[in-house]
Structure formats: C-alpha cells, structure tokens
Image (tube, rainbow, N blue to C red; front, side, top):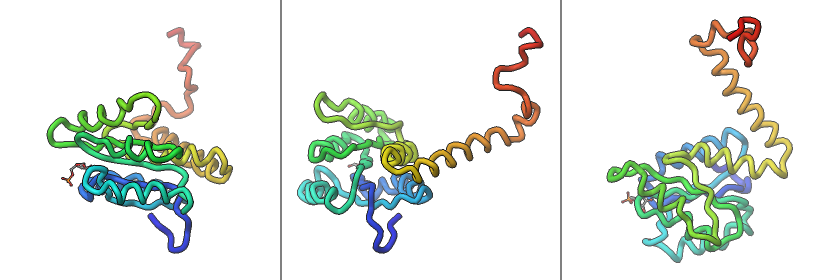
Length: 179
Ligand code: RP5
C-alpha cells in the first residue's frame, strides 16, 4: 500500500478498522497500478478533530483524491468532501442491518453543493479504478497501465472455457445466417 519514501496520491479513509477488509481491496488495486496510497481508520463522529487534521493536511502531503468508506449512517465521505476541493469517492460498507443499503443511501444522497462520487455497496475496487482514471488524466503512463488492466480482464473473459465456441466470431453475430 505504501512505499517507503514514496508520496501517497490517494488518501483512503474509513470509519473503523472493521472496514479494512473492504477498503484494503482498494489499496491493493491501487498498488497493482503503481499508485501509492495511505489507509487510515478515522471515524467522523468519534474522532472529528483527527479527521480534520488528516483532510486539511493531505493536499500539501501530495494526496490528490480521497476514497472514503463507511457503514450505517455513513457521513464520513460527506464530511471529508466538506473540507476539501479534491475529489472524494465514497464506498458504502456492507452492514448487518440493511446489507449496506443504509450506507449507500447515506453516501449517495449527498445534498447539493458538495459532491461525493459513490460506487456500489462494497465497491472498493471500482473506487480505486475511478481514482486511477482521474489521476491518469495527467499521467499518460498510468493511463497505459489502466488500458492494460482493461485489456487483461477482456482477454480473461474471451479466454474462458465457456466462450470457446465463440472464438473467431465477429461481435455482431453471424449476419449471413439471417438471424
Ligand atoms: C461506521 O460504523 C464504520 O464505518 C463501520 O462501518 C461501522 C461499524 O463500526 P465499528 O462498530 O465496527 O467500529 O462508523
């Protein structure tokens, strides 16, 4: 997740250490794309002053995007967004009570004026990919690595044994066959 001495570009924060299992999927994917991140457990309601220090000091340390994951009445991403002009991506953490629908609605229904880009419940990997795409706007080498990632997942599907009989067919189907 963090390289000794390397500058972290993505600040990943979550409301509790119990969220780490989900959020570490984001840091692992960022890592695989060569993006250094830092991961913190800082509750917006249990440690508001520490959260303020983390967010307000982040940009000068090199952070360019935040990923914030929380569960239940999940206000963390909105609070982070309220303190910065850097993009904030929210990850709704699955919960026992409502399967994470509570977290999803808390994060996605951010009122007008302060945006949070929300991914699916438990969607930490997509949060990492979205953060990477934003960083890639000004980093052609990262853009190339993202293309390699996309190509790899396409090839994996094309190479799946269930698709063996489709190999070599055009994507549009067999037009001559008069479907
Ligand atoms: C939220 O409450 C956290 O984001 C976590 O998803 C949930 C439960 O936290 P713990 O009780 O496990 O610390 O603030």
